[in-house]
Amino acid sequence: MAITINEITAGLGLRVDGNIYVVNEYSHVKPGKGSAFVRVRLRNLKTNLVIERTFKSSERLDEVFLEERYFQYLYKSGTDLHFMDQTTYEEVAVTQDLIGNDIKYLQDNLVVKGLLYEGRIQKVELPNFIEAQVVETEPGLKGDSARSGTKPAKIDSGADVQVPLFVESGEWIKVDTRNGVYVERIRK
Image (cartoon, rainbow, N blue to C red; front, side):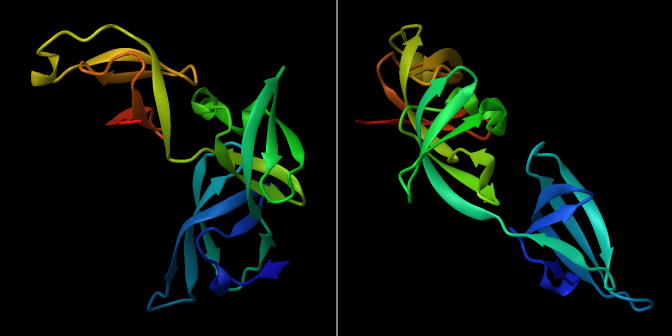
């Protein structure tokens, strides 16, 4: 469906040069001389790269309807990941490249957000934070909490995270999946 530049909003799906993009940011510009235009930052659904484009007021853009659904991770089979749709309870298999490097934070039964186009999953996004159990780390020494410092730890999803010296094996921590940084220790 073709839309005008006045209908652009954040989160809108657009087809540009044959690729599907999501609008991150936009700004309408009305110069004192000449016609209005929109400066848009677009994120490619497949590659996650962000580009900046400028559209004139006379241009018509191709809107793409992106449906947002939630899926629960079930298991891995070869290179496929199997999820259960939280609304229809159907099982869906996707390739690992839809998650990319975030696969190291994928835990059993984790609920993720999927962006669908024409009924097919185009992108899988993990939640910003996960609660993970520390499976393996060096033991902390008495007094380590007084000074700052970190040590490597392996969490239950298989990822390696730098944690403070006082964190021990078996404890639960909160991890930011966007950058893989330890946030806090959790009591369970």
